Structure formats: structure tokens, C-alpha cells
Image (tube, rainbow, N blue to C red; front, side, top):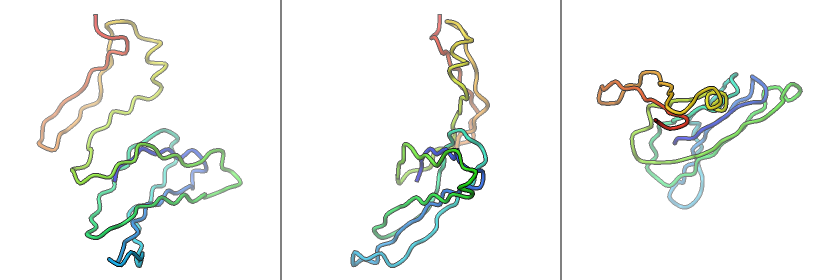
Length: 133
């Protein structure tokens, strides 16, 4: 299970991911907590939750407000995907892209941090916000 999330409420907020398992008769008889996310940062992040379920199931998200009196936002989830493949291992998070775009010109680029592939290769990416010359 992969998805992007942002917690921008109270620093004590939690996002809990559950698997609701079907017992084969259509009834949900068991719920399993897959993961709990607690995050004091207010930017988008990628979550990758590995799990294995053999029968039909549903996944669910539970948002828990840690301190409603001091909360100024909430919990946001986007681009949820559930696949039977290896999880995504590399993400380049570009903070404040508008500022980067406004401070560069055609032909200039920014370079990512170093990534490592599952096969052991090392690579980096170049981004040309205004395209190459």
C-alpha cells in the first residue's frame, strides 16, 4: 500500500492504517493494524506499507486528532495505490518548487540527492525547470 500524506494539524496527530480481513463468508471478523504514522512536519511524504493478506480484505485509514485545541489543519491523503509489486524505494521531494522555478532560467538545473536502486546501482537526477537550452 502506497500513498502520499500530509499531517498539518497538531504535532500529536496520528494516521493509522488498518486491514479489515474477510473470513471467507463476507463477514469482517478481524482487523489488523498495519502501521501508525506520527509526523511533526507539515509537507507531503510518501508512505509505503508492506503487508500480506491471503483472503479478501479492505484497507482503511483512521485519523486521530492528538490535540484538537491546538490543531490548525488536518490529515490529507492522496494518490493511494495498492499493488502486488515491489514498493517504490526512491522519491525526490522538491520543496518550494515555485521558488526554484522563479530563481532559475532556461538551461539551468538542480540535481537530486543520490539514490540507490534495489539492484545496487547509484544514480542522481537533473531537473531543468525551464527546459534545456
